[in-house]
Image (cartoon, rainbow, N blue to C red; front, top):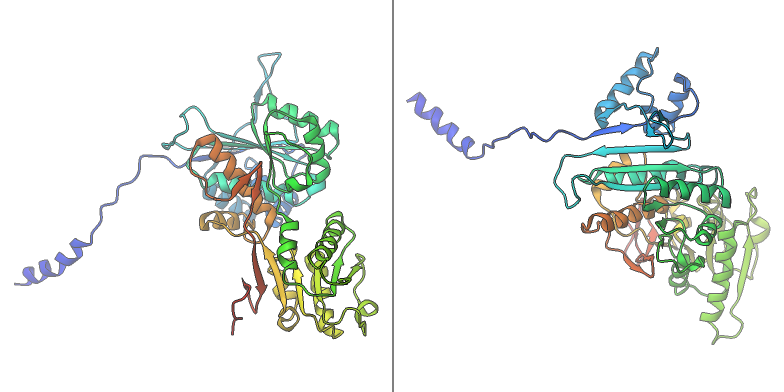
Length: 439
C-alpha cells in the first residue's frame, strides 16, 4: 500500500519532468591580443580594472601576478569571457617570418561553431577608426558598444581597432589605407566634424559609418559614407513648438553650443514671424562661471519666458537651479539630447526641473544589448554616441549577413532617421511629456 502511495505522489512530478542534454557545440573562445607597446605592471593593470578597460587587462593574461587578489580577478574574467591567449602575428609580405601588428591596432576575435546564413569560412569583419586623443573616453566606450553587439550574435566575427593620433589628413589617410589592405570593407568611425570632412575629401571606396555626425552637417554624397548622428535641429524644432516669447537661450562656447543657439534663434523668429518682433535673448555661459545673478536677478526682460539650455549636463544643472533661485518664473525649460541624462535627476531639485521638457532620440533598445553593455560598464540607454554606434554596427551586420536588423530605424540618403519623443525629468526618471508625474 505504501508503494502505491509513493507511485501516486511521483506521477504528477513525472508529468512536469524534462530531459536535459548537454550540447555538443563548444562555447566560443575569445582571443584578446596583447598589442600594448609598453610594459604594464600590476599598478597599470589595476588602473585598467578601475577604469573599466577589461580587455586591456585581459590582454596581459600571461603576466604572473604577485598580488593574489589581482590574480583571482584575472581568473574570474578569463573564465567569464572564455578567453584564450594568442600570440599576435601577421604574415610578412617580404619574408616567411611573422611580425607583430602595429601598436595602434587591436583585434577582438570570436569564432562560433553555429549555423547562420554566413558561409562557414566567412565572418563579420568590422574595423574601428579611433582618434583616441580627440574622442578620449569614447575610444573605449564605442569599442565596447561594438564588441557587445557582436557578442550578442551567433556569427563568428573580427573587430579590429585602428588608433590614430589626431584627425590630420596624413593620419586618417594612412589608417584608411591600412584598413583596406587588411581587407575590411566596413568601418565605424566616431570622428569629429573635422575628421569627417577629411574622410569625405579622401572619398574611400569602403563603407564608413559616423555615429557622431549628422548628414546635415556633412558635405558628401558618397554612397559609401553613412551617418548616425542625432538631428539636433529636428529636436530643436519640436521643442520650439512648445516655446513662448521671450526665448532665452543659454549656450557654452563649444562649436555645437554656438551652432544650436544660432539655429534656435533663427527657427524661433521664423516660426513666430506673424507676430511683431518675437524676442530672443542669448546668454553665453563661460566654462568657469558658477553664479548667474547678474544675468537672472530682477531681469524683467526674461521673466515668464521659455528657457532653452544648450550646455553640458553639469553646467545645465547649475543653470536650472538658479532659474528658481532668482525667480525667473519660467514658462518652461527646453533641452535637446544633451541633457537626457540621469545625472540631471540627482543634480537638481524636482521643483527646479518640474517645467522642463527634454527631447530624446534613444527610443529603441534590446534588453540583451543593454545587459551586455552594462557588464562592460558601458551605457547605451542614455549615452547617445554609444547608442548610435550600436545602431551602426547592427546596420553593417545586417548588410553583411542578410539577417534582420535589431533596430528598425529608417535610413534616408545614408542618414539614420531617429524618432524623437519629448520627455520630462520627473521625480526619479524621464517620463513621456504629457503624462502625470510620479507620486
